[in-house]
Length: 183
Image (cartoon, rainbow, N blue to C red; front, top):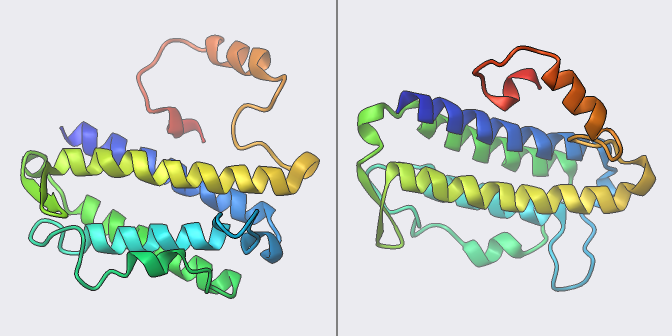
């Protein structure tokens, strides 16, 4: 089970890195751009992730994951005005999450915690966020890719390069390791 915690952490680190590699490719203007009034900017998605992470992972073993102080609807108001402010929220949210994750031990994974009064084991809560956070980071990457168009630097295997990538991987002996170890 400690292998589960290590694997989960690596997965989350990978998605955090995808978000950051996207931010690095974008102008400040793109971080605040919205396709239409009903869509979210990258900064707004970051604000939502921040709010979710603080609510879910602050004292998560002893308090409900939907904190009374959380203002979820306000997370979707596009009021972040600078890259620095956006990055402060991004880093604060991830720090809260990783601190909580790093404090866990194998024995904690079967403990029941609550999110909106619904019981989850700690492992289920981690898995829930392992679906939720990459969902939103995928949105961030998609917006970035659309904005950059041909100037986009791929964050995975670039189009037309799968053969080369696979040949390189299969040229090595079989081994047991996490896919993010080579990133």
